[in-house]
Length: 300
Image (cartoon, rainbow, N blue to C red):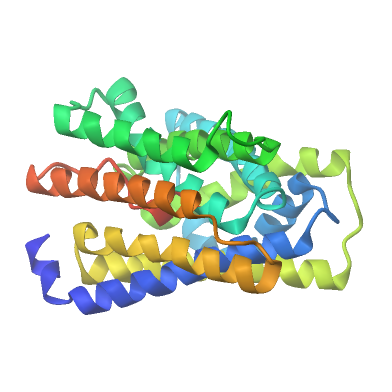
């Protein structure tokens, strides 16, 4: 990890681009509004995104999976499918900044699940960081002080489900290449979304398909630039930069969607990302194998 510290500027720059890519994903989905049901939008995004698997199709076809690995991929696909549907639903219901801020909760949920599933030890400092992150979520939601939208509840579910998906991916990544793990997610989620999309199918226009292909492009580009960021610098350097994603979302929401900047959302998101950054830093200090992911790593 220390050897990567010689290129921190490159790592930070790539992570800035990563944040912009993932904010554009949210903005484009919001641009569609409610014209296409959330499940169908998610399905079309994944279906169109399969074109990016063509270069690795031979490697994927040549891979021989065990029965256990098939079960894990099936379980991850099912969990991620529901999470993606909730995420697409939330993106059409609540401001971009709130979607972004609440997505920061996913690494916090991963930390908690790692204790329950992988027998990770949760020291007092990490417990306090988790509590701080949950307090940040309360700042964003402010229950009792404003009316909560179903989109807020959907985002809480999204973060929890994505954390389960990420932990399953961590297990599979110890046994298979990253290419296979990512490709299998795309395939299983596309299959999982198909029946939900068919239930309330609305014929998309060419404009709708273009926007959703843009979503697939930005999501793919975001994962690629995130990989470049991790190759250039340690996660402890790049993690705090993910805060800029909240800044971009506030700006885009205000300029293009007339969403006023909410200081409570900014404050809550800041608390969450600081807590996640602290947890990541502590893992690096203790020279542990990273369980808590950087914020963008859990996105589609």
